[in-house]
Image (tube, rainbow, N blue to C red; front, side, top):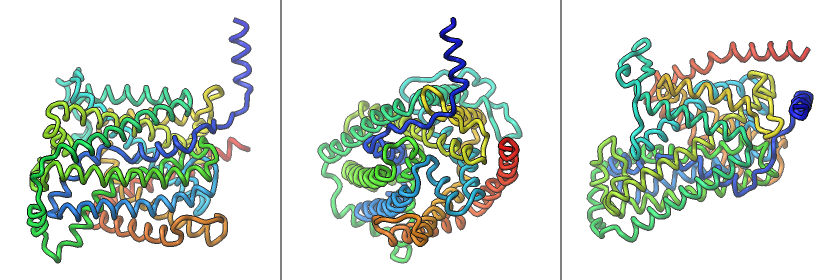
Length: 476
């Protein structure tokens, strides 16, 4: 009894410990690859086949998108030389442009983008589990009940409950040490990569030689020359989505050994690994199933499932379900880990709930930031609004990518970042150009959604001044 009391007194009087810098370059690289390899790679080939492009042009679209992302990787590799603190893009924007712009990035991440992504990926994971083992739906009889005809809290109740439990368990696991999170990520990401390599080999070895050059040429002939550029850009943008997530490792800089050296290595090697895997698996998909057959697959069909079933029978579809489950589970673990570090850094710099800056005295993780993230993500899961909200802020999310690339140029000009950066200055300039084109495309195609999302983000400004005032008063 005396021992437990003494332990309690010591923990209460111990100052906030630092984060545990234990993640090596190998784990950091697998964090990059694991975050990028989501569920998109298993189905993106279908909308690409529907464009009428040939096999070669589809592969070129994947390569071109990959090169743009590689320019982005070089850009963030350069930014990683700026600081050893956690926070990633938030921290880079804070140093370059001040607290308000960086706060809007972090606030958007907490309220919508990050928490919405956690909710969405947890839901996808639960759906993939449900496809293998049926999850009971206990409140099905109340699924029609709504709040303002937009929120249906009891719809898909079994999957929502399973999603909430998954987020809670993974959050608890992350609280208990970043080393544990790294080990889990290494295992799951390695399993994903091995699964993808198996699919590639199966597609190349077991595919029937039914796809001929003539079939490919006639398929490509459906694209009118004047429409080719816009069709190719659409395919490239579709591929670009599957490459997203390569920047999140920068948020964990405070727990990576020698981050100024290891993060640049991790980002560039991780992106190159994923680019090679994506090119090979899409090549295998198109060898295993003709483009004309891929193009007529329904909206709810997953290309990888149909191809695996064709090659391996029912075992193939089970394999893809397991791969999708692993992909979503692994990504979920990574974003729970990385997003919480942004909120932790926001709290440290006085623009978030002060408690989020607390570090666990035993596990040395930002445990309160993790709990804040979990609570809001679970609320979004229950509401079912995560897809609508995240779609609204795609525009602003990519705008912060552009600001980060501009920040690198500013830091280099002011000599705040010294040393050689791969591809500089071409890499950040091309990345800025591409993201600007991408943003223009989003604004033109979804003006209402983009402007609504921007307005939604700006509603965080009163919270910025609230946090600043509150933390200033606490420090006096």
